[in-house]
Picture 1 (tube, rainbow, N blue to C red):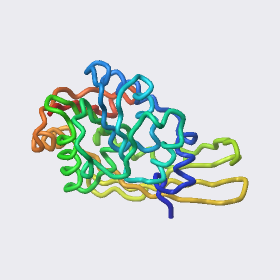
Picture 2: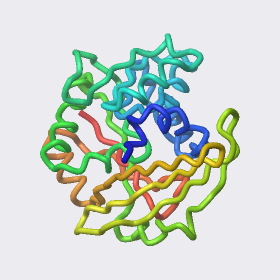
Picture 3: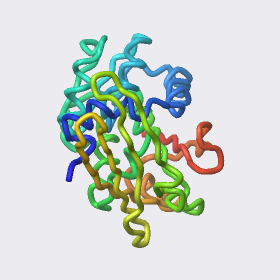
Picture 4: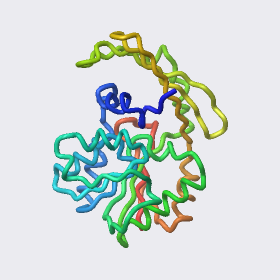
Length: 239
């Protein structure tokens, strides 16, 4: 069993196996609209978004609990422009950020309610007064997990130094708001196989709004995610 974010091989292959980051232009636009000069990227992973911000001259702190993913980020061109931290939003130094972000599945990967509240509180503390928090979550009413199967997800990716890599996802369990699934990876060159299990928490719009209010945020806007219209919501809140 491997965690794809903290397994050195899977962390290194995360970007080439999933290169489509059509979700990120909307976050860059929000940062530009808000005039954010200092950004905290919570769940920065392999650093794709943090480095895009840094290229625009933004001062970025990227934090992630997966050390292997952060190590990949540190090895990318331009990484010296970002301050990388291994940890989460509850272990941050004083920042006074203009904007805190949680892109992709970051918010949903925080499945424990107490940890979710602590993450929102930590981001709140890291923001300057008037600073913003933006993140996305899939609309549970759309039941995205119904397409999480081999038939809909199977693909073969040719990678330098690795050859053909097969990958697909398998739904394991749906228990209320918690959806568990398993990614399979098969390496043709040496016959190696790895699996990685994950769980996401699907929160309703009203639940997220209540959680934000409880931690002292004002919910400014809920947008439709442009890369997954009708399937995903983007929350913009202000300290």
